[in-house]
Image (cartoon, rainbow, N blue to C red; front, side, top):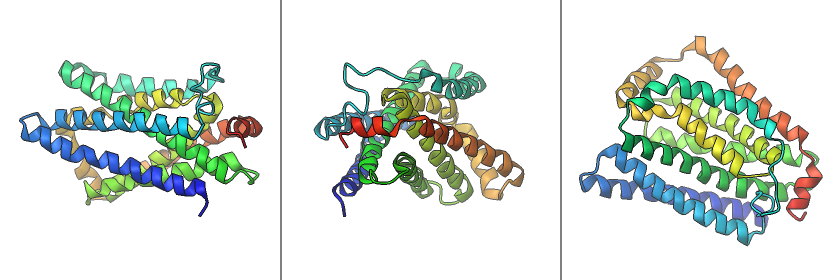
Length: 270
């Protein structure tokens, strides 16, 4: 097994382990009379900040700071690539505005901090570390960027299958999560390579979580959604959902195609 693959496995396992540590921290906070949702946010924020710090240290150790656009001399490229996610995010925020305005300010601030630490932690680990390691591993391949982004996306999407442990009866819903996570991960991979800056996909990831993750603030709606999903497959939604996921995936593929492969390899000293 090559060095890059070993480091990818170690990074992924370390990421999972640190996320798991949030659970006992959450239980500790609950035992000390903190509300369950607040405890979940605080524990998650703490561990994801730890992941971000450790990931940045690893980026410095592996000398991929320039690839991530974290050098002072690096400029963000191709800002026009943000047009599609901006419209996507804006529509989500508008549709969930009522939820935001009817949430206690303290809880809303915790939610905002939580979703953005998710965005930064996942992007820095997957697009900032795992993706360049795959690029180094597949450097001899003609479609090295496409293959590397795809492999990273499959790992990221597969990670969401762990949600089946929380909702064993929600197989269809979890499968949709996996497909969406894989598609959006592919898009983020293209966005990372196109803009040459890990901060951009991290912020966009955070805003997408903010725009479409507000259901957690409205716990009353959760049982209804789960109930509908567990009743069976809603065939009328499969076609538009597939089109939507495909659109996101193709957006990522288009951005990857526009990237100069030699520039990326040069930044990674390949």
